Length: 435
Ligand SMILES: Cc1cc2nc3c(=O)[nH]c(=O)nc-3n(C[C@H](O)[C@H](O)[C@H](O)COP(=O)(O)OP(=O)(O)OC[C@H]3O[C@@H](n4cnc5c(N)ncnc54)[C@H](O)[C@@H]3O)c2cc1C
Image 1 (tube, rainbow, N blue to C red):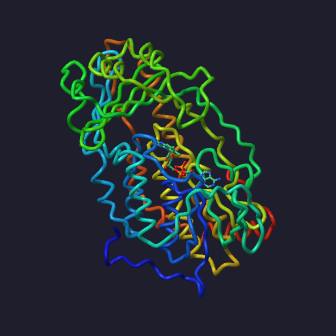
Image 2 (image 1 turned 120 degrees about the horizontal axis):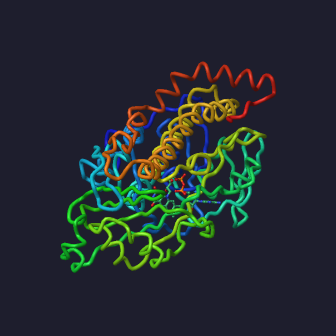
Image 3 (image 1 turned 30 degrees about the vertical axis):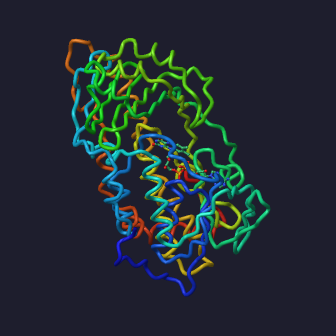
């Protein structure tokens, strides 16, 4: 439900710009909500799946996302209420659980909740705005033509709009079809086993393995080339662990690949017994290969400049960034703002080209932040003598600078300068690459 007094902004153009969003994940939903808030007309959000399940497990949303969602009339208390309520998170030593650092949870992900639960809330916000979500609508082709690019669905139906937003995830089809980029995942050298379940009454009652159940908590165990994240969801009712481990290279990139619990049990043989028991008892887990995509030199179609990528399709993050969804929300706000600031539909290309320039630097820093944390966690116990205390600052999560940021305000502040650059580039017939 939206707050009753919420009214979207009026379009800054005589006729509102029309938009189609591809992908109804968190990024696509955020794009639809932001565009609607700014007075643009979202014709529909398309998703290839027939229905959404409660997929994935823990996902973080930071204050930088909430600032925007709140402006767009979304009651973020609905997210905060279902997020993990622990005030702090604890970073521990792999082998014995020794506390290395304690930080407020807000320094990391902000609110950690189940991706499926958060997704349900985002979908309800889209529906509350009367924006149609068309399920079972797989986009298979893009026609990058001016003044309205055309997309073709698997059914053969063709749709067009002033701007097309491809929020189609890490395995984006828009990347090869729209940008002409060969879609090669680059292995990060790591994969993670992850499990999510409701502990049984017996497990809850077993003092040897239930230390981290009962009430909401978030803990990390770090060791050489590995770390384990544990947190509860739904007030301690559900339990989630994720072990990042060296990748032998043969795990396919998939959200659904079954993991080998025997391998997990081998990996945790040296782990703190206070958490090892419940990991060993877990019945099944998933094995996610953690892949990078090389930073893209553009996020916008070369012909009409009216098809743009957003979210994981152009700036996927490592899990240690805890910012994948929040950065997608920021991108949504900047795109919608840029579309406001141009002079009508003839200038959609100026807006999309400004959007990619406004967003690239920040998303890159946020991605690198996640790599830095992983490297510090995996490296520190290799170099520090077991008996020596380590400086807590060396293992702390350093995400705070990301949160006090209003991406729309930033876009407005930098607009004049960026627009001038884009005007010059269009004039010269040469758009400069993002990297
Ligand atoms: C199944 C799944 C589980 C995940 N689990 C977690 C998790 O546990 N923790 C975490 O931090 N992050 C998880 N993520 C990633 C996280 O959701 C994203 O990083 C973040 O929300 C930004 O998402 P996005 O909207 O850009 O992409 P996504 O969330 O990947 O959404 C993309 C959407 O596009 C749709 N789509 C793809 N191709 C087409 C097409 N050709 N036509 C129409 N629709 C299309 C997909 O069905 C999907 O719904 C998961 C993603 C998925 C898809």
